[in-house]
Length: 66
Image: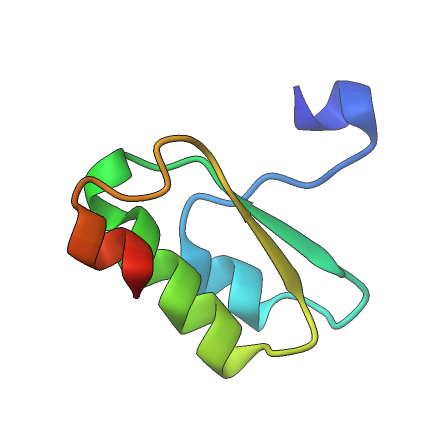
């Protein structure tokens, strides 16, 4: 799918963060139970990157508010 769209796919969020600075957007399409943790880590470590999170963003209201 990534090749068809001219994008790159990664198997972990650590690999995304280690990738070159030319990527401006990260899409989190992992299991919902880790969406919030991964989005927080990406935002904290790479504040210049836009982070999109697949639905559901969080599995609890408290996590959503984080």
